[in-house]
Length: 182
Image 1 (cartoon, helix red, strand yellow):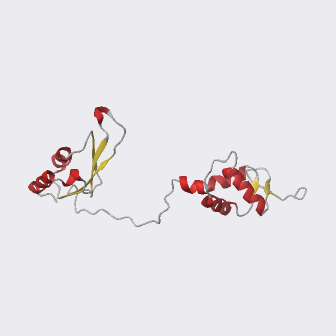
Image 2: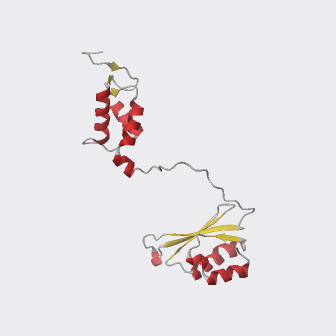
Image 3: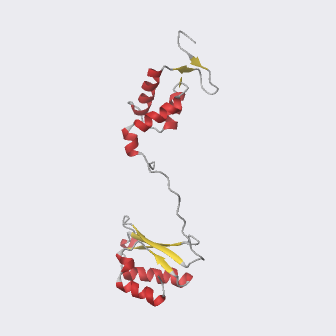
């Protein structure tokens, strides 16, 4: 204690000034969203206060409380705010029998005006086959399945998709029936 101010000894820092409840909130708000504040996360906020030479016992809890109340941080946070759900497993009896397919994109244009990605994943091995395409039609999907799945791994029993028109058209359904693919 020096001049009626309480200090705490630290192993890695010089003396840390102990703050009152009002000072704690003011210091955290200034570090978090003041003129030089970067809206740092809870751990970084508490560490910055510590490096600035301040200490109080509930430092981490106060930082958590402040960040959770900050509207800007909640709005622009990359954290997922949904409750966790159990993972659903993709079951398949053996490799290359069941595939999942989807279209990813559009991306920025690549060579050959390609902006979509057609992706197929084997449910058993999690093996991925992908091909960039300029436009995705039934014919392109059939070519992809023939070249990347059937010719390499054999005829699958089932191909699961999101029922997009490229996967569920009349032509591709007849082709599936001819190959006995569900």
